[in-house]
Length: 159
Image (cartoon, rainbow, N blue to C red; front, side):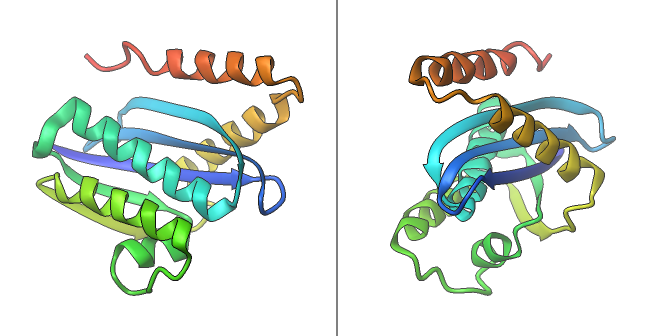
C-alpha cells in the first residue's frame, strides 16, 4: 500500500519547549491519522527527528513492512541526512538518525522528500504544533494531561 506521511517539529527557542507531529494519508490523499505530541525542552532538529520516528512506528504498526512510504518534511537537514546526502555530526542526532533509518529499512519502500513549509499538509501539522505549544502550561501536571489527551486522539482512527 502506498502511504504519504507529512511530519514537522517545532521548538520555541532552540532548545526550548518543543512538539512534533505527523499526518498519514493513503494514496488518494485521504487522511488516515494525525498525531501531535509535546517533547519537553528540545532543539528543532530533535523535534523533526522525533516526528519522523513516531510516524514510521505508526506506519509499521498499522501496515507492517508492506507499506511503500513517501515521507515529506520541511526540514532539508533531516531529509538530506536520512537520504545519505549530509553527514550527521551531532551526537544526539546520530542516535535519532540510526533509529529512523532502522525503522525506514523495515518498510518495503521508504523515501524522504523535502517540501516547502507552505505545503498544505505540512502547514496543517505546523499549525497544530503551534496550537499545542500555545496550550502548554508551566505546571508539569498540565503537560502530562495534554500528552495523554493527544495520545488518545490517535486511537481508533484506522479501520
